[in-house]
Image 1 (cartoon, helix red, strand yellow):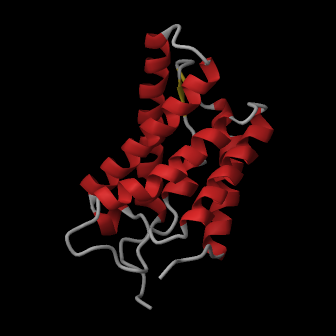
Image 2 (tube, rainbow, N blue to C red):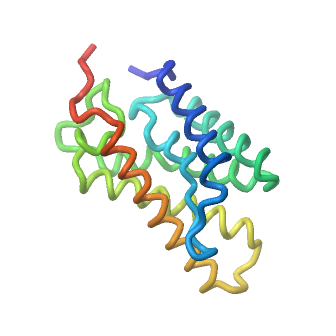
Length: 175
């Protein structure tokens, strides 16, 4: 059964994009590490979301950030790439018993190891796409690599904190 997007997910979209535009734009570590918190919207969506809807939402969230950052589609392209690869990674990380229909990405339900693997793999792909598209070359490769690593760590830590503070430690009721 495919899951559609609900009111909770719409509120998360608004919250994560607003946080990105108003707060995270000014929060940079040593001029190199950026926090792209808007990606949490895509990562925290229900596991069984329709793939076409996921791609559309990836474009929408990336395009919205591009409008405010004036980045000409860089975030949209990276977000669509993340949305495309997310189901493939979820298939690779499927637990022995499979996913429950009501499961969302949750550090408490899925476990720390699963969550860290899932989050940091997709963040690495997304951030590499953003920074290499921004650069359009492999000049200053080490500087770009440093930006990617610091940004992945920064964004990942913020996402872990969000999960621990705001996501329920219990599995949602089964339908």
